[in-house]
Amino acid sequence: MEGREPKLDNDLFFVCAVIEQIGRTTTNRRADVVRAIGEKKLSHLFELADVYHCEPVENTANDLIENHNITKSDFDNVSNCKYKVPYFMDIARVYMRLIVDVMKQNDTSPIDALIAVYSSWISGKIDDYNSSMYFENQQYLYESYIAGEPLRE
Image 1 (cartoon, rainbow, N blue to C red):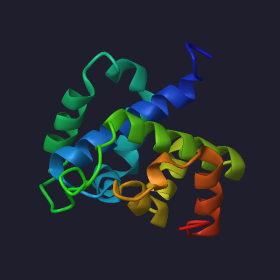
Image 2 (cartoon, helix red, strand yellow; image 1 turned 30 degrees about the vertical axis):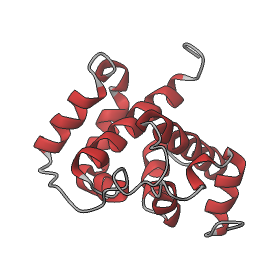
Image 3 (tube, rainbow, N blue to C red; image 1 turned 120 degrees about the vertical axis):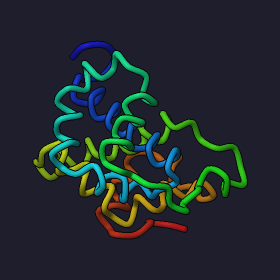
């Protein structure tokens, strides 16, 4: 444990923050960002997250956008938000906590859990800032993820 949270959690949080920043910058669904970056580069980013922390998240995101040719899309959940837009770090923390739960409960690697979460139905719900999914409690998110649907609407 280094700091308030375990290093693994902090490193996952950083990767999720980069994914969120790329999604907002390119108006792409977060699942599409994860696919564009790919497992190998996500693993590299995770393994060196403590080094990448020295740079602003925006710089790392912009480098990945350029290096992986991530083009603009039409998923603008920020402009379409009818309420206060959540801070990108807050969304990264929601994803990080869910990924940690999935990782621990399924005895899987951090990157496999990350890809599974971002590739699942729940990613679309978390990314809909007009829904309540992104500010639900951690246990509810995990139980909904396992159920394959929101436990309540």
